[in-house]
Image 1 (tube, helix red, strand yellow):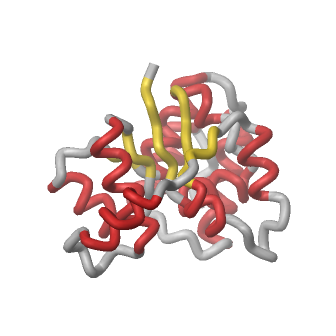
Image 2 (cartoon, one colour; image 1 turned 60 degrees about the vertical axis):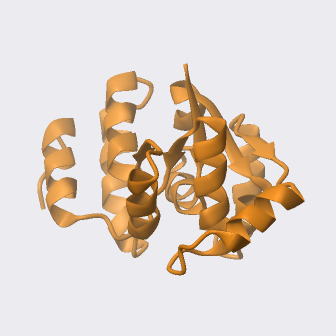
Length: 165
């Protein structure tokens, strides 16, 4: 079973479509307390409660992690992203994020990393979601200004059997 660490954008993406229950199916999933704070937003007022209800575990961020992230030389990453990177590296977690810059840093640091496209592929493979539900995910994300590559969305629609648009 994998040990996963979710970044805010993955939690937001899955929360929008009601897909948070996917993460615990893939392994023990954690979120840093500082990242959970990023999920508190008026556009998704129940997201934090949904994250907890899905069984995603909150890891309290200790001062040593904040200090390490503050000193980490990655100026294009937010403090929370640097915390995710360091925690995933040091604790042997697979990092789940849709943030391209964080994915590049993770790859350069040897941290295994996957994004939203991979999560949809895992949702298909799990069989825990109906194909029409997954098609709705792919329809809804672009409407919410989620930046998923159009080519990958088309490939996923074909894989799932969604009507092409």
